[in-house]
Amino acid sequence: MTSLPAPSAKKLGLVIDLDTCVGCQACATSCKEWNTSGYSAPLSDHDPYGADPHGAWLNRIHAYDVGEGATSRTVHFPRSCLHCETPACVTVCPTGASYKRAEDGIVLVNPDTCIGCKLCSWACPYGAREYDYADGVMKKCTLCVDRIYNETLDPQDRVPACVKACPTGARHFGDLGDESSAVSQLVKAREGYDLMPEMGYKPVNKYLPPRPRRDAATTPSTPSTAAPVKTDGSATEKLFAWADKLLSR
Amino acid sequence: MHPAYSVILFTTASGAGYGLLFWLAILSVFDNLPADLTLGMAGLGLAFALISGGLLSSTAHLGRPERAWRAFSQWRTSWLSREGIAAVATFVPFGLFAFGWIMLGQNQGIFGFVALIAAAMSIITVWCTGMIYQSLPTIRAWHQPLVSPVYVALSLASGGVLALTLLRLFGHESEDFGWVVVTFLAASLLLKRVYWSFIDAAPRDRTSGTATGLGRFGRVRPLEAPHTQANFVMREMGYAIARKHAAKLRMIVQLIGFVVPFLALVLTLTAAGPLTLPLTILGLLAVMFGVALERWLFFAEAQHVVTLYYGAEAA
Image (cartoon, rainbow over all chains, first blue to last red; front, side, top):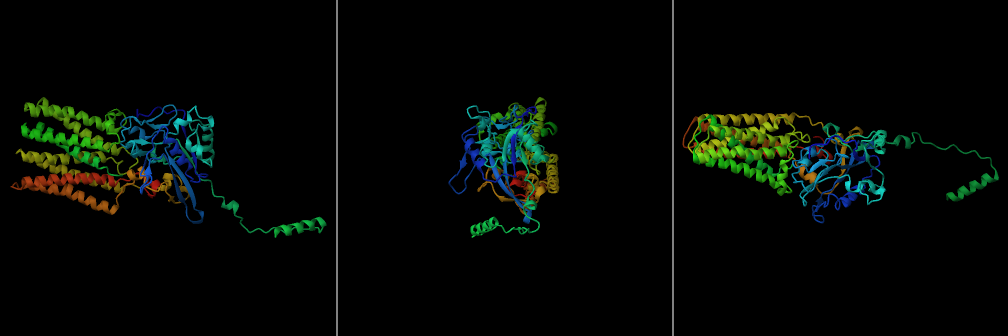
């Protein structure tokens, strides 16, 4: 059913730290690896060894140059489904294949009823949905619904593949509907924000902005020269001075 | 937005088909159009062919056409679903109207009543088609109140020229109706021009800075793309034509789609002669070409907000 369910108390989602993301693509490849044999299987590729290789991926990592000159910075920017609270991708679906789960807010596509009309991808401002040309249906981030509730996995592995793969801890998974959760606390502390809030889709996923540059703290304002050390001319002092000279060679 | 040719064909053909059905119904009820068998066979048959051919071609862009029947289920929220239901529902009064006209030689009375229902359903269906686009907030050029009215106006204008051509072919000239069609051509040109002025004046205040939320740190420019080749999002949503081409194409749409048929029909209405039929057919070909080009331009001019992540500065 493409009518949206009543807002759930539980809002599972991701918090992405743009300060620590290094753009290594580990989350994207790990996502592809898990999902090409999981809920979204297959995630088809086209012409993979040819001149125009492309395929369905559920997570894309951009890199942007932000600001000008000496104060500019590189920001790596992972982009995937934000599991919005009021997603138009769900309500435009003519078949009911696209739906939002009432119990945890995850937005999914039923691959057995999707007709591949692509209207949901038009309705998404975030480019989160990718059509699988070989499978004829729409693919999207499932928040690894087949991992997070998977009791055959060890408890520490019951997180989305992208979160598990991130080497810098830039991706956090949790319940953003619970104010006391670690992710909610993180969003509060770091002033996490929504992408394009003016669109009115109310994304659940949050982005943590890059921290302020630390140039001011690390670059000394005046060149400092250490004051000469006063010596008392003792034998121990001379021994250390000789050792220092010897080791400095 | 990438113009899917099956969708252009669908909206152009079925738009003209619904317009033709509308006018045949209206003429039957309000203009005492005789229930002539050949006119009924040709007119209603052509409307049926255009509508169902268009509907079938629209399934060509589906990944899983065999599941298309599922699209009738989500009328509560989805304009695409509503369009599908309206399109199929229109066949009921349409079929009764055609039965009365072709089998019983009657297009008035009770069959006039079903004709009016078919006419109303035709407009509702085309309106739903327009709403599929108009309801998308992600595309500024489509999220405008004139999108559905333009769809309906073009359907009535192209269907009107088609109906007039058939009337003249089968010797049922109606001068009043000729002027009605000419008026609809002029009105739809005006409406389309207002639509263009709307989308040209719409503020493009979404930027790569607002899309990423990084604008507070300065100008946001793409440094490294997430993939080497275009992905689905870029192929489907990244299609755009240069503004200078858009201006030229708009001129061609106005000239061929509206001015040529307008002048051709006015000529036939003011000075009847042996050229009446050729001029009418010229007008028909011009308006159909113009509407198809307008539909292509409707897609090609539309910029999706997701392009902001891929290097567009504003949307």
